[in-house]
Length: 158
Length: 103
Image 1: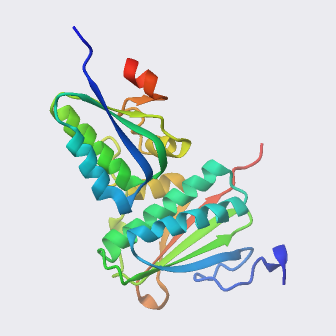
Image 2 (image 1 turned 30 degrees about the vertical axis):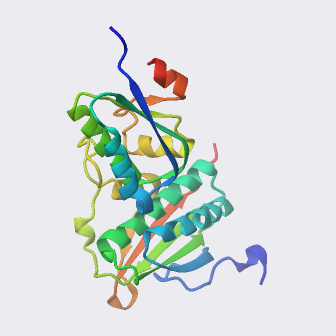
Image 3 (image 1 turned 120 degrees about the vertical axis):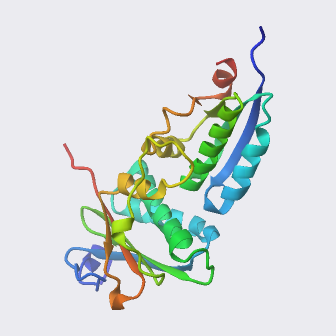
């Protein structure tokens, strides 16, 4: 199996295997200095899916912020914990999934703050939602940890 | 009446979670009440919400003592992040240092 023929049928974590191609899977320690390793890889994956530089940078920002949320709020700074990042080419865009083993977060309590309230912090969730088309917290496989799915579609051609 | 002095602080590299504490401290240390502050971002390669948080805190600290804080020479990525946070209308943003100095 080579090149584009590899699209689809690779197992996905939420059963949505149609028309998606696994681009990469990376497991890394939940430490702030590891994010500089992740960013160029995510940008390259986004460009491979057809995004321009700004679209790619938006995807990098959203992924970076999602990882930060796991590091800060999920694992509360425990550097021996790990995050698994997978990226899929979904034909009309990209899907990033982040899997962690932190205590399950309640999606009902995760929401962006009011931007008119000018203060330091709290922008990560807003960036994720503003930069991506879809941000969904899925049930984690086995009921342990969290699974976040970030999706961005390519701009429609005029 | 002479224009207020302006002090330039240069940030470089990735202004991210890894460097957030150092960035925050450097900016707050630079706010001494005697000068307005210009933060040169021309050598910044990446900025995230933690970097933005440091700059917002510094902006508020500057305002608290009657000073200003402006941002200079943002990259496309940095400007995009400020726009997403709707902070591009909160900070004075200048395209280059001569423009910032003469403002």
